[in-house]
Length: 204
Ligand SMILES: [Zn+2]
Image (cartoon, rainbow, N blue to C red; front, side, top):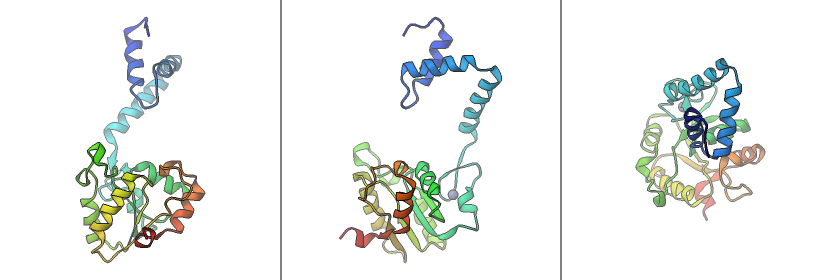
């Protein structure tokens, strides 16, 4: 692409770094911003830099939060005996959208994937064990995608957790859900949480 301006070229190159954004889309977005009021563009860039600088991760569950402890963990209306294990923040959002779950979460920050060099120590597992030791948790629900990485992670965690007095369950897996939790429709996801099954009985 030949640019008439170095500033334009730089901005397009930055946008094109975003996932799913090619050069043409990047150019369209940048030209759109040039059509906007300066104040509007200022708000846009301010929102992004503020997000990056000020966002926190809940010290209990690692979900994205505006405070040291997120609203879910801090809420007395939630069931603090239940922890749902998810891969990332998008899964928390997907499950919250179903309005079918009233417990807490623990965001693992990924799944075990030897192929990609992701091992247990790269995930928020130690803090999960500490939480289970030090809080009133009685049930842990696995809500990770039905992929090889998901299976490996569940297998590993189940071994880690089996000596605790815990009920370990998993959302219905292998039913018609196409991989990633965030893409499952809300009714299917809500139902699979409500009808979760004990992990041990799910693998026989
Ligand atoms: Zn939290």
